[in-house]
Structure formats: C-alpha cells, structure tokens
Amino acid sequence: MRQDLSPKRLAQAAEKAFREGNYLIAVAGFKAAAAAYQEQGQAILASEMWNNCAVALVQLGQGEEALKVIQPTLPLLEAEGDLERLGIAYGNLASALEVCGRYEDAQDAYLRSAELLEKCGKADLRLHALKALSQLQLKQGKQLQALATFQAALEDAPRLSLQQKALKKLMEIPWKLLPK
Image 1: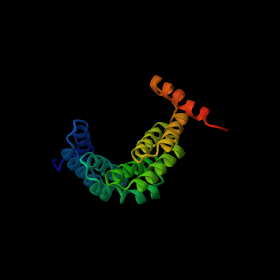
Image 2: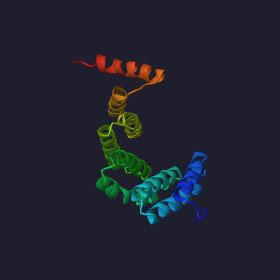
Image 3: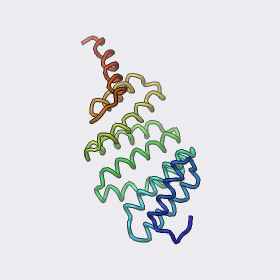
C-alpha cells in the first residue's frame, strides 16, 4: 500500500481486498489505514481499522495476532463512549478468542458484545453476536444453551426473514414440550 494515499483510500482498498478474500493484503491495508488515521489524530477511526485488521487476521487463523491488535482498542472505545464500535470490537475479540481455543473467554466477549449492542439499539448487530455465541455453544456441546441463545436472538430481532420466522416457530416446540 502506498503511504501517500489518504487513510480513507487505504481503508477502501483494504476492504476490497477483504471482500475478495485477499486477507494478507487486507491486513496490510488496514494497518496502513490505522497508522494514517493515527497520524491525523483520528484515534476512533484508527481503532476501527485495527479491528478490521483483526477480522482479517482471524480469517487467516491468526487469533493471537488478532488479539494483539484488538485489545488496545477496547479502552479507547470505552473511554469515548462509542457503544456501537465497542460492541463490534467485543464481537471481534470473541472471534479471535474462539480461534485461539479460549471458548469461555470468547463466550464472555460475545455476551458483552450483545449487551453493548442492545444498549445502543443495534438489534441487527446484536443478532449476529448471539448467533455466533450460539454456534460456539454448539461447538462446546451445549445444545440447550445454544438453542436458548439463538431463540433469544430471534426474539429480539427487528426484522426476520421467512426462514428465520419458520425457525423461530420450530424452536418454540421443544419449550412447549418441557414439563412446567
């Protein structure tokens, strides 16, 4: 990535590389964009780029590296009170922890993500965090917990696709069969 490009252009190029599955190029681009934003004194945007970089690192299976770039962004986002970005960052943290096999820590981070995203009214993003948590719980053999988590995600979703609506109805059946 050329250093004379604006941070916005660097970020756009990195996003394009990410969408195309060129994760190494995306990592380099997001790092360059983060450095450029930092140089301009735009710490929030730099934090966003570091989080994007971490997502690309997770795609490469480099969870430890992802943790190194995400963790420093959390206190800054918290201090700024940017609940949406903070919620997203906790979701990214959870993904990195999951890749590292730190499932309990990942579960806590997904829950924190969902909580923050609920506070700022981002139900669609909260749905993604709870779906990821549900998948992690399935991976851990916690089927009932996973079912309950996914059902909670669907309950609060603002808009559901036809498939999600059908799944929601199906998921209500086991609970109706349990003794009261």
